[in-house]
Image (cartoon, rainbow, N blue to C red; front, top):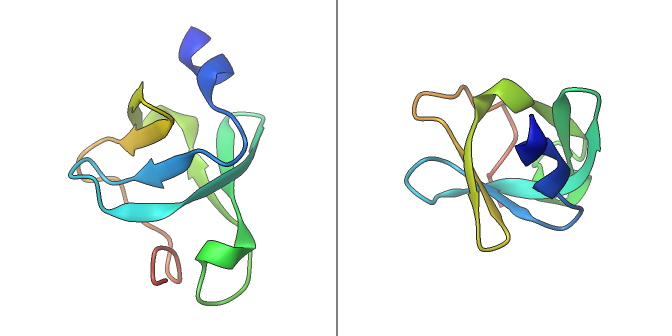
Length: 75
């Protein structure tokens, strides 16, 4: 899982098509913790690392079909 080490704070997280989902707050265990400022409910949300498809140009792309938590990407 060397890719995990490439995920850094403030990277953008998007769907497989490039739609904004959130911003990385930190990588915690095997999950990406998203910032609260990108959620409509003001809470932190998590994306499982196994849902990451690729990392390119300071952006984390999620696999197609990854479920997006309610309240995320609304801003």
